[in-house]
Length: 212
Image (cartoon, rainbow, N blue to C red; front, side, top):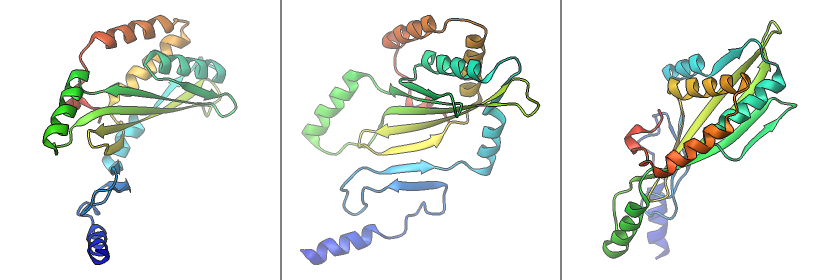
């Protein structure tokens, strides 16, 4: 028995066919014998890094650091991130936002079918997006530069996950627009309440429409 286990572990340690790709396995659940979930981080390619550099920064020429940080927090909360924390001394705000990708009834049905028939192919189940935003003074001293980064993790029905930095321009443009609205004095709290009510009645996003 010990020899069989050793052989299986050795087989599981063989080279990963994706070793030369931009995917990094940050938590392996085993191959020949699956004993846990698998976590994968997808590193950006050089082209994707270039795209991120073009969309991640926005300048607010008439804002101070404290004003911008307050607006950033309001924008994140209005976009459904909770809890949102900020540090005035570092000018950093961060938060997380979870979202279910399939209706509850489908999750229950899948659980019943899996319990009765056993193995089912894994399907995207839910996602969690983290936001890390910094506020710094511009080089010439007038206004501030806000830099944002959104990382999206998609979990499947087996508990496996894949994480990648969002590079979709709309995600950053929408956030910066919300920040500008907060800086102009608009109360985004009502916007958040309206969005939450709409999300409660709307159908979940399709996994095919996940952020890039």
